[in-house]
Image (cartoon, rainbow, N blue to C red; front, side, top):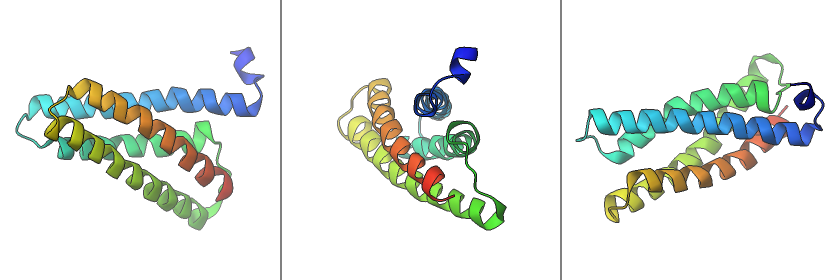
Length: 138
């Protein structure tokens, strides 16, 4: 743990983003597969969107506090940060939904594989957006 505390800030940020990115992805996966298993008649895009919303909330609070150590002070600054995060994640939701729809619904590919590919791309996109939001909007 001491080695982690002594890492240069850039490396520490990337490691914590990966840790919380994996946890966010796990939340997304668990909710997505629970919904598609429990309610097979539910459209995959709806299950994906619900999973996104729950993982979005988890990601916002963990990224804000533990990954990027946001210094935003006051109600207005925090709300602005939340709205920028929401806008960026909404963009990634559309990308995620498109990949899921094309891969699972249209091309009839393996759900697990399509969701994995989608999440890898989304994690990369979200890192770029989150870094900008939590660093430049403070």
